[in-house]
Length: 334
Image 1 (cartoon, rainbow, N blue to C red):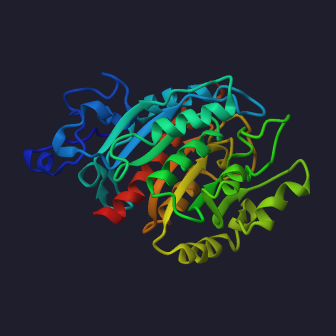
Image 2 (tube, one colour):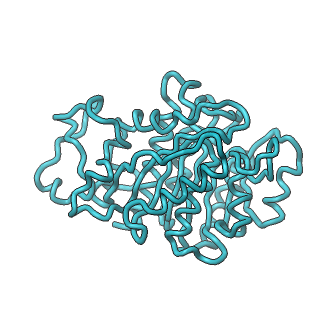
């Protein structure tokens, strides 16, 4: 249980992201930014433009069951104070490869779902250097994924046909409407596909499981060519299906969206729509690491509801999942 070794001058000279020295400034002290990365406005000129801007979206008006994910960004930031910078599986020091910054929280409009997503997308589209900086959004409910996907798509040059998408979730999130609302957390990907922001034939949803409201919940994804790996599939053909899918997208930019409810509530109880029989923490990290080589163009981690997990395990896991997404970007950048 040792703490980080204080960086030598040699190591400091190679850094792309400056961190507080944990031997001098304890991890439980100071302003809580994601993984202790500098605030975007504090990044030194020599580390600009940043490679990734991480920002929170404290919004949960799109939920269909338990509210509270609006407090997710704060909880994940606090939990991330003990996420260190060196990845043993990838054999890389994240802060030596990438320039990273916490861009704060997006402005939100809690009473207006559609307007909120437009507000967040427009704000995020201008973060950092749009021609270089990638965006990692921390939610908030899964509706906010639409905003970050749109901002990412625009920053990628609005490619015709949309982006490739790697989607970890218990639910497909392609329901047309719930209670008459078309912009809730059950609908981000049907809206993104309709608008040409996501290419359904280059979208894979991993971890889908039931029970469902009705079998027709699967129809939209199936009819539009989305690749579905259920939780049960993962135990047999799933890894091979994922490997084959990755070959089809090759070096295309791909967005990763991770709903924490893909994880079994035994490991991640702090979520609004818990679904039993999910992945373990170890399985989730292994799946993300298996994407090594992917050209990640953006991502999000969503649906952390901290007051349902007083131990903070869900927020800590979400912070590590975000770290793994950043590591995937570093793998192809080093």
